[in-house]
Image 1 (cartoon, rainbow over the protein chains, first blue to last red):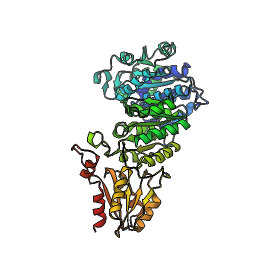
Image 2 (spheres, each protein chain N blue to C red):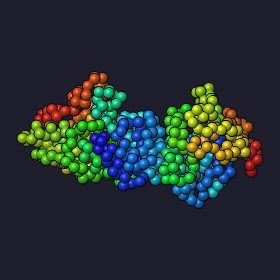
Image 3 (cartoon, each protein chain N blue to C red):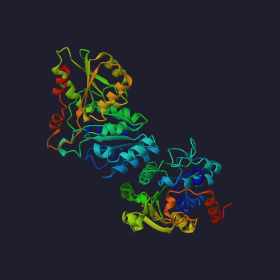
Image 4 (spheres, rainbow over the protein chains, first blue to last red):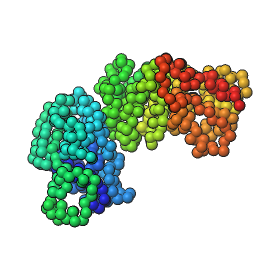
Length: 252
Length: 306
């Protein structure tokens, strides 16, 4: 997708791919791909909109639309823009791209669920750089006060942002303790261990507290020459690089 | 105005279970009756306006009708990007209410003045902008805003504004109320709480050839194209008046309309409002209005001069 469309942000998409695989492929998110507007569905706000190609792929692989449609990523007049627009594709809940909005929006959906007495859950996937936005912490302070046990925040903590290592730019650590001190149940996982992610998202927690899952990830995970190299925040791969990556990932 | 707002939104919410109030730490005891009459639908969202707006958008997307309320600069400029992206881009029916607008909080300084909110809100695609003149017109505007299925910004005052309308007047988006007849050669288009100033000026000019018609222009976006067409075809002078910057506000919107729709018109358009500076003096609303030239005397001078 990144090669065909000539788009950036491939590495940030790869860092959260395993989280999405567990959410959608592991049956964590309860949503019928044939009824993406069902009012009782679980919701995912994919707040790091720059990495939306990862969500498009996950949605296509779970039947929200066809995998063939992924070839239209970022095509003119297509419905899979480089960063999502409102209602662009089935399963895309929110248009993101400006960081720091997703948690507040997801919080509103979770609170509405409580008011409507519906038991759906709202998941919000954020980047670590995004957690530098003050609005994230406004939302973080509100959710526990209102006992929103139906809200799950996930941080794709790949330790990079656009221009450098995130912990060198801002005081990111202790990330999990930040959420804990705000009143959240916080769990830390290896963000590339399917079992750990699944356990963190499904093991019970107090229903009067929101859950934060801090996933330690590697930017560009799965492709040796992309992993932990921040040039891939901007680059898209060449034909040769795609072949090499496919070989490493065991894809045809 | 804010008491009328609290009373009217409570009445609407009693009838409509989708309505939720999000107050960003303002309205001490103002919403007590709302809280008891609409149990579980009032949220004090704290000193956290960005989250208030994002949350409202998320709530609207799941079928609720949120109303976000606090002092104007903090519910407009402070959380502007959330309004742009989460409310307007997603076309969510969130009603944003700024209280103490314009120079209502004059004595608290420029941090509490809102002389840019009309400009900020009207530039957002899909956003409707309302500035009622008094507590009665506010009730009509709020009812219309809550019935509509659009992002809407409502700019209201504080307390003790003169009441002009004896009861809530008929209101539609894009239609202004004529509150005073005139001699047909001049008109004053008053935005929001400046209507009493316009009426005072019209009184002083009542016996003259230039006795102005006076309009309450609560619908700032959309404007009232029918009234504008008629006035720019018949009047020698039209004055706009607002407690807002001359850049980008109501008078600017009228000037834009004239440039686009009535460029041949010989009507002279005069805009009264705030010039390009912050006010540093201490003083109440009347003092600030004089400092910016938002007065009946200025209107009278402008209409009498050649």
